[in-house]
Length: 317
Image (cartoon, rainbow, N blue to C red; front, top):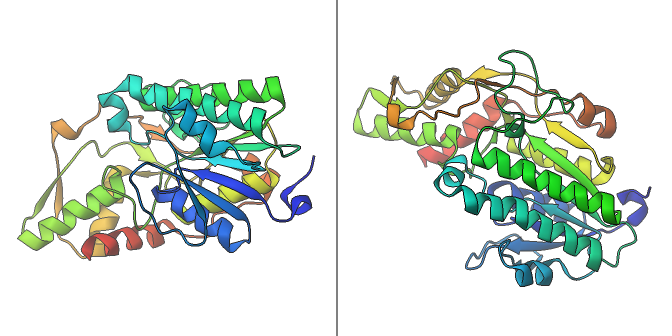
């Protein structure tokens, strides 16, 4: 099997390049000297540096074929319905975008790429593991048991991509990232949502902040460590393998709130609002990234406090 070191400069399409993680991945790959094409949503105008832009709509087969055509060595597929709340509002849309859309990407890359060994990195989610045990880290050998439309549609994407790989020889690698954050993440996600609410409470002299369920335990990473993991998987991941991207350390959502409040110097208390509590919350989601470390040499290099400082400063300004 050839590696990226054998290829030299790699021609790669990043889908979801206008997203929080996708934009960082594009910039990392450009800095490494690769030929990067950014697949973006219609109507968006990101500034990602010296790259080619292609409009990309996962529900439109012609759009996918036009974006993926062009002799790519690899596709890093991040485009998705990425918010659990958005997927719950329209589960059918989540399945069409995440599962059927991934099937379109994988099939097009397998059939139309001029590269001798085209490669697909599919970014899935750790939420495919579902509720499972309430202690201990999840490993890739644990059976998936998704309990939300978002997680179910992402598992469907994994199945679709791996099927194309078995049938065509497309080299498929799957990333299962655990929660991650950093500057630029939008407030659909918990850390920036907390930072926004706490900052607003400070600004208005309010001592209480409404929150959802604070008891779940999560494994949080700095977004740049996740980008490092995706690059490591592209360079050294095994075809057909799934990889957890995780720190192995869990904290409660309550502790996350308290740490963000501490960064902002805010004397506030959380108050649970039943309207913000999700019935499908996974109680404990911590990952074992032994396989990723062993196969690629990846290690997280930033602390959660660095990520939370970035998030808090972004919301404060």
